[in-house]
Image (cartoon, rainbow, N blue to C red; front, side):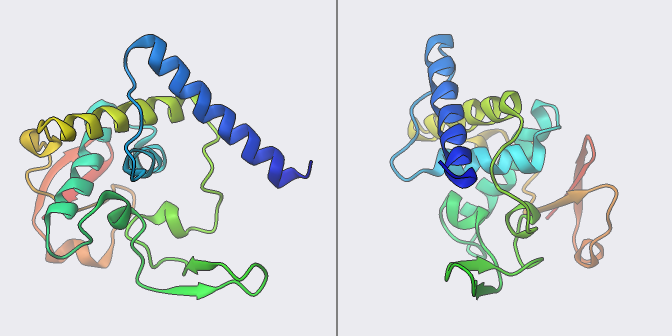
Amino acid sequence: MNQKQERRLQYLCLIVLGFCIGFYAGKAYPSDENGEAFCLAQNLYFEAGNQPLAGKLAVAQVVQNRVDSTMFPNDICGVIYQAKEYYTSWKTGDTIPKYGSCQFSWYCDGKSDEPQDSKTWLASVQLANQIIVGEKYDITISDFDITEGALWYHADYIRPYWADHLNQTVVIDNHIFYK
């Protein structure tokens, strides 16, 4: 077994473990057919893994606000994996988002998109599943928008060029939200 196969097996074990723990704890639900819970879990993990629950919910809310907006794709995975530019890898032939062209920086930062912290990953999976299941029962995260309609955010230690052209809505932990 090569290193890539071993990583995939470890990743699969983490997912299975996460669903098993969630099932027995009564807090996680099966993923939806379209994989939107997985996409959302990845975004929660990489964008807000170190944030309190309010910060995680705010990041999820921005994703939902974008789904509801005509300016972005109309599904969770489409919003999260949206990039302005792509290129074809000469090595693998895969289509890869160009560095710095993604809506969420983790997706095209050149680093692995495989979670390394299993506790944070499991918490992200559980929260994503709860959000997705709530949407199936018409209890959407939009009903409790703590971001006040935000479509963008950034960490407080950076200052993107676009921030000056938007209205700041709220600051949660070290994220600043805008609409």
